[in-house]
Length: 230
Ligand SMILES: *[C@@H]1O[C@H](CO)[C@@H](O)[C@H](O)[C@H]1NC(C)=O
Ligand SMILES: *[C@@H]1O[C@H](CO)[C@@H](O)[C@H](O)[C@H]1NC(C)=O
Image 1 (cartoon, rainbow, N blue to C red):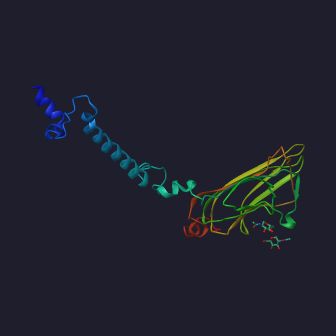
Image 2: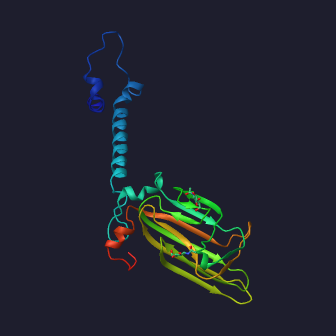
Image 3: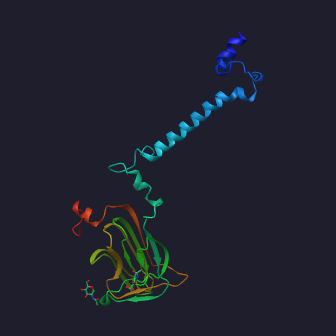
């Protein structure tokens, strides 16, 4: 009875012919007895790795994203490539802007400029690649002064902001998602004569943008009939 059980558990060992070199069969509990389960474990482990790789390179980990359609997996991984675009800059000085000069806000302290699209000399962001971008801007007026700042894509007015607080500091902000083709520009422009407040250690005025989805630029969005500006 015991012999049958052992044969069932260790068929490889029992099917071997007697070693001719004088070595005895390994006894139960010795290292070579557990060789068979070890191989099975290795096969199972590599199978698990293969499954993980298959799931990783298909969309299986992201089967149900919100929205109309599943976001393609290569887009979810865009942040891990050198094609990601993101910038953020702030104003560290008091600035007076004139609409008659087409002045843009000269955000002079650059926190981040992935993709190199933002130019701090003129405050203009130039899209390094076609895509859908998110933009946000915030500003603080000097005391008693007005502030009216507009966001432009190329030569087109997109959104504006306005504040005029007497005896205090007014603030403005706005944000927008825009399709940009490569080389399109976005900047924040003075609508009137604007008085901005800032100091090296008091940065209330900032401009931020980043790539949300690659490849869907201004022209593609225009063909979907979104907005009169196209
Ligand atoms: C300001 O911009 C407008 C529109 O792009 C242009 O027609 C005008 O000549 C510019 N003015 C100055 C002073 O650069
Ligand atoms: C940034 O803007 C300035 C002023 O328009 C220009 O002279 C300079 O070439 C620009 N820098 C880059 C890297 O495009």
